[in-house]
Amino acid sequence: MAITRAKKESLLKGTTDALLKAVSIVFVSFRGVTVHEVNELRDALKSEGVKYTVVKKTLLKKALDAKGFSGEMPELTGEVAFAYLSEVEGVESDITAPARSLQAFVKKLKGKLVFLGGALEGKYLSGTEIVAVATIPPVAVLRGMFVNVINSPIQRFAIALAEVGKTKV
Image 1 (cartoon, rainbow, N blue to C red):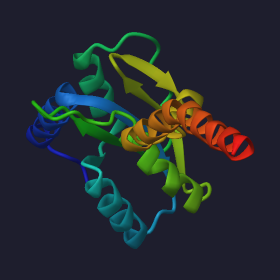
Image 2: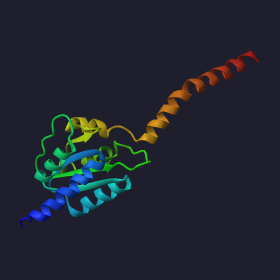
Image 3: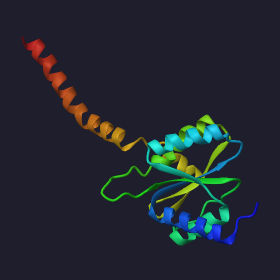
Image 4: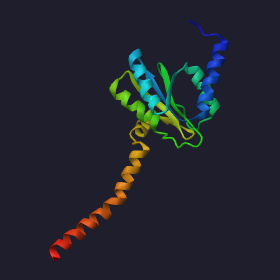
């Protein structure tokens, strides 16, 4: 069934508005994904504050042109959806959340869901670059790793002093 021009304009405006507020966007190709799997995916993304939308490729390309990303747009093949994280004022957001959240489902759905590319910090990224972004741990985990790196030398020094104290007594 064909979409009316008014409906297309409405979809284009909604998509453009969503992309203008987005700080991180990931494009995926999906084929053979069941309704149950999509609902599970949407629930998982929603818990991270990420939105997931399916839109016609022509409307998506027009909306992306309005955003004005630098670099080369990834090739959008097959049935395309995009996950995005909107900027919220006063709240620090994890820009890797869309890619990281989708990564679990890309592994789980083997071949049904495939990374096509994305956009981050004003420029397009290829599918392989998005996979690299998806492997970055969440901000809280990175902070924990940083604290551990700082704490490790101090802890080892304290252990060494304790051992020296045992031999001197």
